Length: 475
Image 1 (cartoon, rainbow, N blue to C red):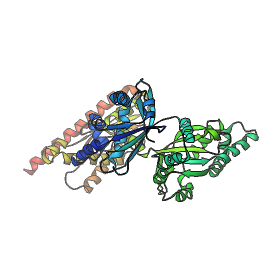
Image 2: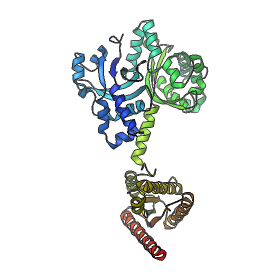
Image 3: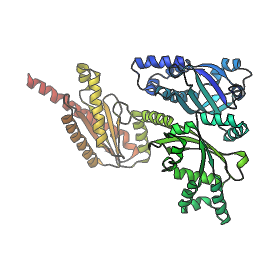
Image 4: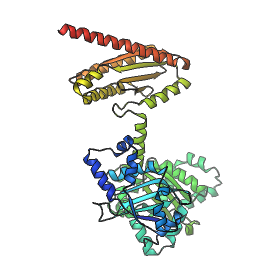
């Protein structure tokens, strides 16, 4: 069955990867993606731990290899370039405790063809403690082929494949939906897009007319159902909210004759949690006249979405303070310089005494002060403003559309919040040196930044002079 399977199957040994993960956990690593961000070569260290034990015939065909030996000798040509970024997402799913992962990635055939594939992997039962046997399936994204292959299988083989697939599978009857669409056509409707905008209830009616024939075990696990009856009796809790708009798009495609579709949608588990899904939809070949048999495959991409969101967050934020980072600040400053709105006010901010705190109390104490600056500036800002950490103890606030008077009000709010923060946190008080400048055009931005810095440094100088006087008085 393994050798003759119509999908690309790989039997692999991940035990060395598990041992590497165990070492990292023992060393105190908690965030795998951050660990990779510190040193991207660690991803290659992980992939070097994966050992291919066997592949099937479909794999050799898909990757244009004449034999398993030829394929394994050229894995460096198969898994390269674009794949590494996606591997981090797959590894993060295993790190989080999942015994399986799904992802969309890129491989390369030995004849240099690029292959966009959906990868599904599962640690086989009995090997959960060692990861020594992992079954990986690679699906070329061609729903028509998948549907045709399933129809040609024997009933038992098809049932086993359906029930135990690592992908959520749904068999549905869309014949009532087709009849409703045909009725609309007989009424002379040609602009279906406008029709469903004017009659959103038609979309809801079509959703209600879909008959779910069967789902597999992975579907029950994905949606947190104890049985098929439990899931099917609560379909309204699964398909709701944003699904109405997604289904409207799906109806539009069906109206245009697109009987094979794929899209990303949001469903809901019975617990109420959103499940982000990559859906492939295909009206099976022998049923295209009446749509009586439709196959849907759903891949849970929630982990991928979270990982992507986290990576996107890291690209725009300073991890310690949760404020925007220098990269985002520069981009925002350039955008405002080109397009406004004007006037633009800038508040240059510096944390007073950070070096002394680091030297006398350690960097953990200094990091605590920096986090407190993040708390203050986050509370002081609204959606139209940008507060960023642009250096070790340097911060900047961009206030587009605000004049100097408005900027002074923001500065006063920051000062008030610093006082409140100091009352809340015992120990080292928070002290900020601030300077304000305003400009009215892109040509004046650099000069305004310089004036704000100059004013901030003057304030900082006053702070240190006052502290020096205070110290003399204490003697």
